[in-house]
Structures are given as structure tokens and as C-alpha cells.
Length: 280
Image 1 (cartoon, rainbow, N blue to C red):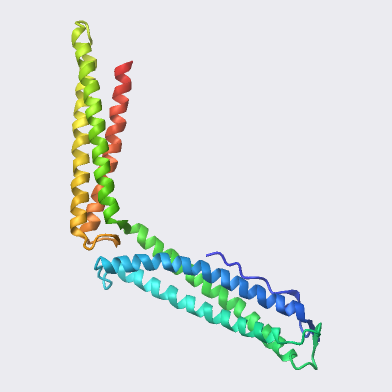
Image 2 (cartoon, helix red, strand yellow):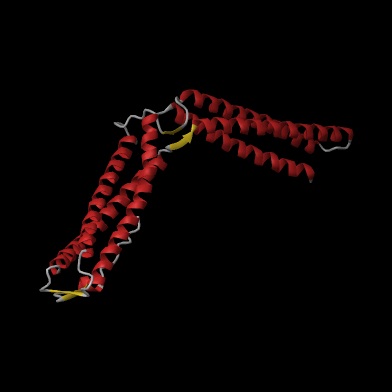
């Protein structure tokens, strides 16, 4: 995560200052609060996304005593703790803002003999200290968040909607079946034309034969996708948005669906290339 922590204002860096402008003090504290507010809102988005994964894995009855789920949960808990620590840092800034807002509006500057001058010195100490602490917390949070993401990607942990996936596999199967029927008709018509030409080269017959074989393979892969989608819906109860990962039957089915889809893409490319050769 980017560390956007605001640089300390000039007044806060002046050693042994004998007076401070009230407007400068308020502005600096407000900037720090706004920055922490923005940072925490970004962290909340990130944590909510990861919470959906953790909750989904619990719904899928993942064993959090085993890897990779144990590491995911550990990262998530650490990120939540770091968020709470940042909230505490913000509360300290907000407490000073309240004190600064209570300063007499007629006062333009605070001098050493002013009662409120001590607030500024305390705030300076806090700002100096928290600058480093917040940077460290954000660095630690960023590392945990990235580690969580890496584990999810490396272990192919999916957030899926089983109802939507089953519906998509059905639509895909129907689309492929329709395309296969259309191409079969075209090939049959082309075969008849070639058969009428006595001098037709055997090369075209071989290409047509290979194209028919590819259509059968495409049809077979599409049926596999449909069956895997149906089995996935049966395997996961209740259906809906869940998360699946290694050592789950549902994870194997999703991996198979992706593999069958890749196979179809390869077969379709080969079919299209042969179709081009046939027209040469």
C-alpha cells in the first residue's frame, strides 16, 4: 500500500519555537486526520474483500488448521489488528483537534505563556512519533495484504457463484451445440460439392475429415463442461457465492471446467485454420 503520510508542516519542525500560528496547528491536525480517514477507508475496502474470501471458505468448510487456509486466516487477523491500531492513532489526532477547536477564536498565535501552548508541544511529540509508527503499520499491513493475495493466486482460490456458473455452463453448452450443428451442415454441403467434382484433390477430403473430427472433440469437451457444472451445483450446498480452494471436490470441478474451456479454444482455432485452408 502506498504510504501517503503527510510531511510535517514547517511549524512542527521548527526547533525551540516560541510561538505557533493557531491556523497552522489546526490545518496540520486536520490534514493528518483526513489522511488517516482516507487510508482507513482504503484498508476497509481491502479487508472487506478478503473477509468475503475468509467467510466463503468457512461456508465451504475449509480446514483452517491446514495450509493454505491457515496462512490466509493468519494474514487476515493480522491485517484486522493493524487496522485497529491505525484507528487508535486517528483517535489521538482527533482528540487534539477537539482541543485546538476550543482555543479562543480571537487568538492568532500561541505563545509560551499561553495555557494552550502545552497542547501544541504535546501534539508535536505525538506527530513526530506517529509519523514513524503509522509508516511501519502501513508497511506491515501492505506486506500482509500482498502475502494474502499471493497465497490466493498461487493456490487458485476462487470466489464463485455456483448458480451463475451452472447457468453459464448450460448456456455455453447450448451455444457450442448450435455452432456444431451449423458447421456440420456447412461441411456436409461442401463435401457434396467436392464429391461431384471427379478431379477434386484428396487434400480437401482429408481436411474435411479432420474438421469433422475436431467438431466431435469440441462437442465432447462441451458436454464435459456441462456435466462438471451440474456436479458442482450438487457438490456445493447451499448454492450461491462461495470460495473454493485446494483439497475440495468443488475446486477440482472448477479447475476441470477451466481446462475443458481451454481445450475448446485450442480446438476451435485448429478448426478455423483448416477452414481457411479449405477455401484456398
